[in-house]
Image (cartoon, rainbow, N blue to C red; front, top):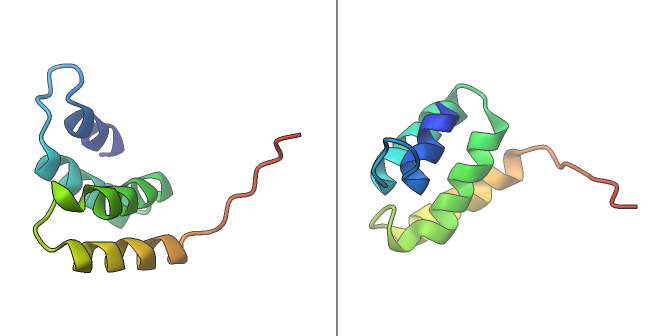
Length: 78
């Protein structure tokens, strides 16, 4: 599901870029427990409020809440 969403978002392979389809697939993958999909969906809702949905303020709020619920990932860049 995550790969399908990415294909629709980027228009890769045989997929035509379709933002609404990408969002729907990210939502399905997020509901199935994919943290990557949750992050990507939150990013899409936050940054893509000008193309993904019509209610930007609601989407931004949903994106922030979604990101708050995800575990923090720390990386060692040393």
